[in-house]
Length: 119
Image (cartoon, rainbow, N blue to C red):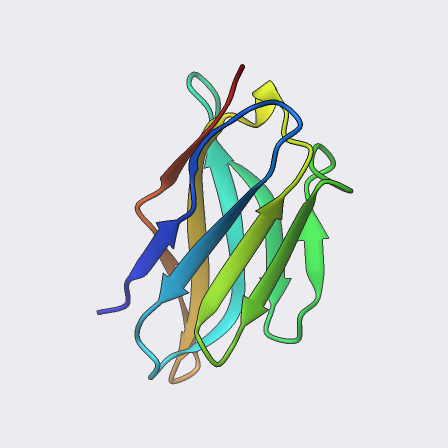
């Protein structure tokens, strides 16, 4: 069974930084894309950043210039470097991976990690 485990969340002051990590098990799969979503209380889950197996990246407008997504294919790990954090970045952050198994794509989700930006 494929498992995604996030880490790196916590409490940080406005303007601070955090780095999230998501380690994926199940090396039998080829992970085409990996990404980060977030969900704040009372709001819908939204895509924050995504990265392909070829390292092409995309970002939500709200985080462009502040967040950077990267991945290590050898480690089956995706990272999210978050700088210049704002209170509105407070949310549970979820890792997502899309795996290719015999030509069929499957979605997998991590358990989420809390990020709180507050003084």
